[in-house]
Image (tube, rainbow, N blue to C red):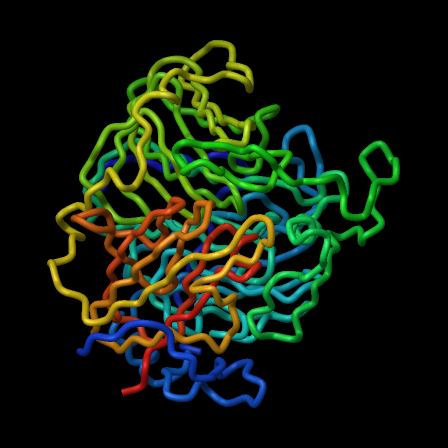
Length: 541
């Protein structure tokens, strides 16, 4: 049972959303390789037909899997995606957010609940909502052109599903490059049998920021990465998607001093970003700002506690292209979870967190003011938050606590807690996914094939499936599987996102127990929107 007396969240932009009760509405054999058989999702195929031979996202198999998850209390939420002016801490930008807040308000439920959320779109583009880390029913997964139609400007969509996966999760769009704006929010699913005891909780979202800075937009960054050719992001099979570059002010923007700036802004290409932890090349985009809960190091968020408090920190990397090295000055961290799942506890001085990864840690607060230093790994920039438990002057933004360079933890050092460890089992099916592409051509792909919505890697319900990821590129890639969690090798942790270093191979195993069509993709948004995505499809029986 939890023994913490209260939860304290960092920043005015994070508050617990309301809840309520309402009636729920639900809107082998060995094999390897990809099925090239044509088929598009029931919602957006050119001929309107469901995928031939595959479970449809709204099919009876999906409804039956949802029924088995149960029907607990329903918690109601609302999100409005809108154009906003946001103060990042010394710099105001025009961007897109959920409800004029950065990050969006935390949504909090308990495992066994059902979520009922209405997403309203007040953007100039189509959008959707993806529930990162949750094993949702397939037609609620938020992938346009695969699991649902996009939500058009001025329209709304109701997401309804059961929640069975406790832990630290988050929500974000799955439309174009919208993640590299301010459209993200934490989603915390409490465990009714939580074994951890702690006094306070600090939710920390990390982000790299370019939108609205001197005329830059994510689309202009992608265009530059494509050598000045406006190929645009992947449209997920939907021709209706508007590749609108505006952030509220149109393409004719002005700097804060009123001087005209180029419509596409200054160059954001990053050369020479190097990291031993990431296998050499750390990234290609020079985001001018890095944020902790929506603020820069010039005006950081401050979390308050008392000396001796046990503080649970939930880290979420909501960035688009940056891995972060994180340390809390003079505080060792006990790592308890990754991607929502418990691990055997291990002490570390610092964490390396790839895009979309989550880590939970527990610290015992000292007496004073301490920097939560966040390095953009290999990129030469940083940001920070503050832990304050007593009087004293806050450290400056350039502070580098010594534990930042101590015992740096990565997921390969973790072991799954016994409560979530899978029994050993030979895979029934093996899917081989080789990551390909180069920075020079920016032609990222899986098995040499850039994403198209007719791709299918077939699986069947009940199978134990192994994905063999091989990285044949010179870049690192955080690979994410929708709708499932997988086991890392040799008793490693259960996760939904794993870092794959250049030249390396990682085998992950998952149980095929959530029918539908599910994305696998790199969570570097510029890689995925250039082609490093594909789909796993459940075969009809």
